[in-house]
Length: 620
Image 1 (tube, one colour):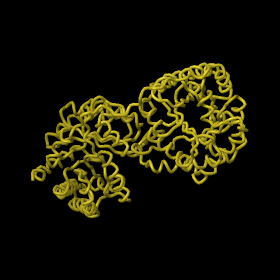
Image 2: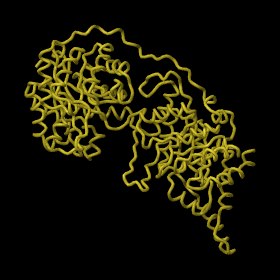
Image 3: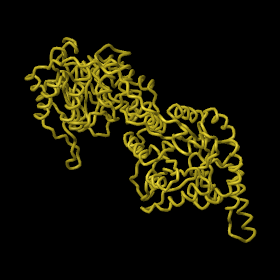
Image 4: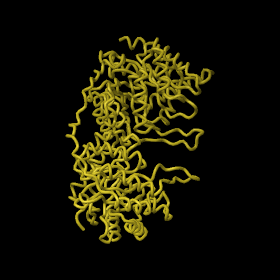
């Protein structure tokens, strides 16, 4: 056979359809590792390939879409990455019988890579290199990188393939109805970027049906001179008696195949829901349409964006200005109550402000029950003319959802944000409650910084820069301090402007970490627990992640309760608890740039009493 690219210059080639759809139809459950079937049921995989070849496919893709060590690791199969990919290529080669090109299928890693996740670009490239080398060893004619949502990840995959093979690369992004990738990158960014990265063919696959994909393909035709590919789903999946079914008929897909060719596509096929019958009809349609000769696109843009004025830190909020002026600041926690009446936290915030708080922090704890979001409470408090620090975590939110939330928060006047990964959801009375962690705090901080530069996560201009004053958490008592410092360095690189610690209840353990915190050059806001009793301290020591309570603190509270018992009164260590909190605050006064008073299941009244006692200390 002539080379794949030579054939593509002469005619339109037909790619196969869905592998997963066919394996599922043949009795393979969705919770199985489909890639492992290359080793355990090679005949079944080969039969699917042969069905597509008989249907007229010019290109068949190996059953290796998820055969990288990250995804295989979820099934305990990371050590079989090489074997699964080599065998996947060999099975497809045998099924092709010289009648079809074999494309090594490579999909996303299934983890977020920097700047949105903790997996480094170098780690991603290593994983892609491992997979591509094995596919090349198995004898593929080309590579298809497909269903990528992250431009950064697919360009890493292209570099990895190029490092081990000179075979052609088809690079395909998956998009929404609006033509943007699932992470919000527009065609005018990803099409030139894929061409520049070294792809030989660029295109789209998955996520949407033919109609929406055609509009994006038509836009891409004006952005690149490279051959285009299109592999849509057989429509959007529909729930029919509990099963997701793709209902676009083979005839409908064939009609759109002609339209794709008219738009300049040279490689056309299908993705989820497509079957050999869809491929058969597409192949018939391809033979009836002459390939379109596309005019040369205009010169590519240099990718530059209009400059957007960014905002200096001190201009972002009153809290930022106070910190920049080296004032010692105090932030106090205000909790969202159960129910729809949010007047209490608004009134409490005003009370704290009157007592000297520079701002109130609205925590994003995963509590059960019907509670308003931290963002809703923060917005109402801001309307009451009290500045807030919105505690915003990655838990329960997708990357795009977090971007929408932050843009909305900024529009509502929220400027100070404390960005954290978050703790898993507390199930409480909801046994089916789950958590979503699309990215971690490092990725979230990167997002906020990008918004502050006037760009969304897809690189599209916002029209104006946001003014977020970005805080991040650091745990000086982490079990693995080296890892914690590395993560802190990444957060600072991502755009952090101030640091917040958990409640400090062991000054002896905290003191050795102060020098390392100062090395960051960022202001440190130390957590301060408004202690109430021995029971409260024991709870913090035993059940709150990141809090360490000194033995002498527990001993003092225990002695206070024992003394009260001997006097014949009910055990009460409240006064001693407040005294301890006050002493810790006094010790921290000369060592950090501020305090964040937290109740952590204590009462707002105790926080008020503590704030009143701190007045002489704060005045120093």
